[in-house]
Amino acid sequence: MATINESIGKDGTTVYRVRVRVKGRPLESRTFSRKTDAKKWGQQREVELHRENDFGSVGAAHKTLAELIDRYLKVEISKRNTNHKMVETCLAWWRAELGDRKLRNITPSVLAEYRDRLLQANHKQHQFGGKNPKRRAPQRSFAIWQPSPMPTQ
Image (cartoon, rainbow, N blue to C red; front, side, top):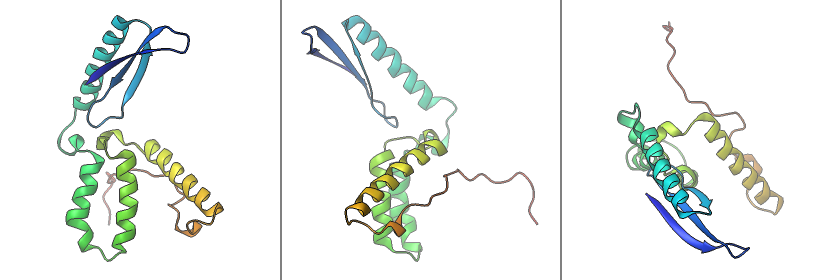
């Protein structure tokens, strides 16, 4: 949904900030000097985002990362022989950062960007006596696994 806020700029002129929020997408914002331009952009961008979310999507494509994480914590984690507290802490971070995005919008490059942020935060904590650097996220790039079309033997 697009909302428009009117405010006074640093130079005393009136400016209009448009914020467009669509479930499964990050918030988008833009500032205009004319209210008509703000309304027009907000309406157009909202329609574009809905089309992007609905185009060619079926099944899991409508799910967000938060829904996937919640399901994993509810159903799957009890089946795993792992440190549940550590897994829940890691998943909480990913949920906070990318939870509102649709699964189909989370590409390997998006994962790599957020992984780098996490590594940078861990590095800063280590510099100031924080977490153990050996517990950092993997250094390799993320990729989404897809089955090979070639038969295996």
